[in-house]
Image 1 (tube, protein in one colour):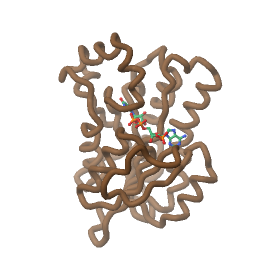
Image 2: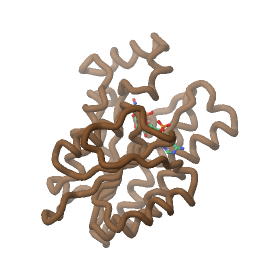
Image 3: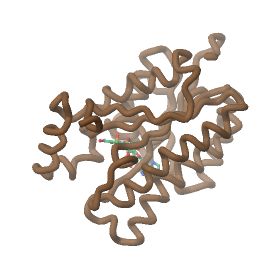
Image 4: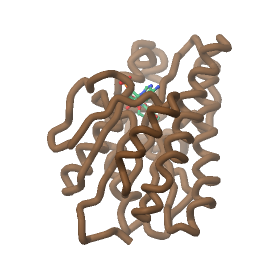
Length: 238
Ligand code: NAP
């Protein structure tokens, strides 16, 4: 149950650009919660109004994660948004490894290291999966493998933390207009193929993902754990 005696604390990992993490951070601020964000760069592209603090955090750096975790005794909502893709370059073994390191192992390390604060708040974790958790793509084999891993990890973490009163879910967005998808959107064939396959005939925007995140973090989702909720304008149903 949500603690009503104090403001809830959100930690959104990977919210330094105007992407999905930032949209989630803004929505959490709007509903009156305290929000802290992180990114890989020294400073965020823009700091959403009302966000308390920005921390530079490389999710591949266990020491940095531990140092940040020491600053929190309670986290009510942990959102794992940090990820990269290297479209058309992920056949290179070093790049493949790097993508898995950030998108899967890094996010796992964050959950593990913040475990005391999340359990302390009887909080909840929201991971970000992808259409590529379910579909293959020769252009992003590492990204797809990492996101399939997130889908699976969400179930394992949900089982692990359920006895502690902690829910773990994921959102699998469809194709969303953010900096991360710029290269894909520059490929006109891909850009149009997404629109043609999506029943709502458009790419998503980051705010499309924020609402489901607010729901998953709320008491209305109290009986939902281990699920990957697809938010794709119907892309995956056709
Ligand atoms: P984005 O704005 O580029 O967000 C990615 C975030 O990850 C940035 O804040 C980035 O920080 C951070 N990051 C990258 N490498 C990191 C590292 N080593 N350590 C810590 N943080 C790191 O892209 P987005 O599209 O909103 O993506 C957000 C999430 O949604 C990702 O998990 C992505 O895979 C997922 N997703 C996106 C789409 C889509 O269509 N856009 C679809 C499905 C899933 P810096 O900016 O500081 O580098």
